[in-house]
Amino acid sequence: MATKRRRLSADTPPQCSISSISDLPNEPLQHIASILVKPSRVLLALAIDAHDGLSSALSSAIVGDQWDTLDFGEIERKLAAILSDEHINAILVRIDAVNRVKKLKLTNCINITGAGLGPLSESSIIEQIDLSLVGDHEHYRSNFRPLISCRPQDHVLPILDSIFEREGCSLRNLRFPSVWWTGGRFEQLLRRYSELLTNHGVSCLKCNVNLPPENESWIDSSGNQKYTCYKCLKHYCRKCTRPDDIYVDDPYMLGYCDHCEKRVV
Image (cartoon, rainbow, N blue to C red):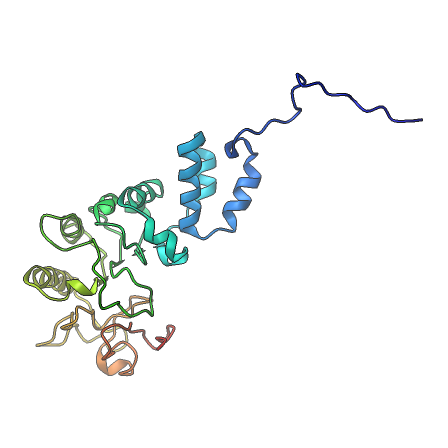
C-alpha cells in the first residue's frame, strides 16, 4: 500500500519553528557552551541575551559557576584585541567577578583603558591581577603603547586602591604593562602595593623566614614581583628555590617555583 504524503500549502505552519538561537532547547545550548573556553561561554551568553533575551536559569547554565580564574589568553588573540571596556565590564558583572574571580589575566586585551574593571572594586578575594596584556611566555613589543595607564585621573589606580584598602584583601601578585615601569606615579603604586604585601606578614613556605628579607623589596627595578611563584602564588625566599626559577634576570619572563611549570624560553 502506497504511503500518502501530506501536501503542505504555503499557509501551513511548520511543525517546529525556531526563529532564533534562544528558541533552541536548553540541552543543545548547554552542550555548545561546555566545549567552549570560559571567556567564550560568557560572551556567548551575553550575545544571545542582547539579541533575543535569555532566562536567568539558561544564562547560568551557559556561563557556569567555576570562575576562580578569568584568563583572556584562552580566546583568540584577535578576539581579545577588539574587546572594549564595555565588554569587560559586562563579563565581570555577568560572572559576579567581585565574589568569584581570584585570578584575572587581561591577555591581549589591548583595546581597553581599564574602565571596565570597575566591577572588581573592593574585591576581597582577588589574589592575582595581570595587567601586562601579554601571554605568560611572551615578550613585550618595544613599540607597544597600551591604552590602559596608571595616571591618577584614569581608571585603574582607583580600582587598585579600593582593593588595597579592602579589609581582608587577598591580593598576592600584580603584573604591570612594561610602559608603566618608569615614572613617579608607578613608583607610588609599587610602594603602596609593597606595603600591602609586607602588612600581610608573608613568610617563606619552606623555611618560614619573613619576606621580604631586611633591606630588600618585593618589587624589582623592572616592576616584577619577587619571592612569589606566578602560577601557584606561593612565596619562597631565595635560599629555598633554585635561582633560575622564581628569580629570573630577564624582566620579560615569569618565575615559577620548583613545583610548578618551568618558564619557557
